[in-house]
Length: 246
Image (cartoon, rainbow, N blue to C red; front, side, top):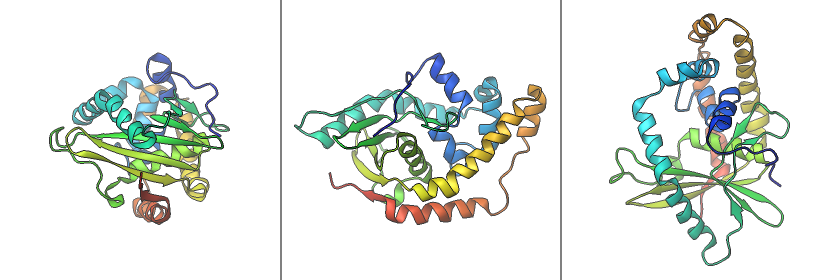
């Protein structure tokens, strides 16, 4: 069953503070070099909240704001597609902390409850290049690695075996993808890497902030690491990412 004890709100001061202090579902892909930001930017933003604001990409912020604006509408579409006329069995969670590693957190958009299990859902509102022409992910190959890793992180945090990535467009429909938990990918690849990153972060936080930010600016992935990440993710995607037949 899912682990939701101690979940906090999805916004506000406590939520922001928790995101700042922990590694989140969206941070994981960036730490591995396939996310929204570079690992260096994630490191700097975890050291200084003010640095986070300075480094924010205005276009990315705009897209995320649009996504949040339409997320509730997209979620209602997902629930109608998933449950139909059957009574809904699920809830919108707050931020959830990993059951044994409190420095790993995530905020899934929705959790479906079954008699014997739970399933997580991540909603992606498509708004690029604009709301009129944005398309949902048409095939599994269209799903970005960063979203695959985000759902894998939520599956690990909640101890769920199945998750959904729901891709929604205001004008051009939607698509649903099933993502199955890859425990081997998490234990042998993702967790060791983000653990090393978190150790670096904790060490830098003990330094004067200016020095810490200067050192963080030199953080680089080793040569060939991104290619290795891509290969490992592709291997997992072959068996753990499929288009749903809901």
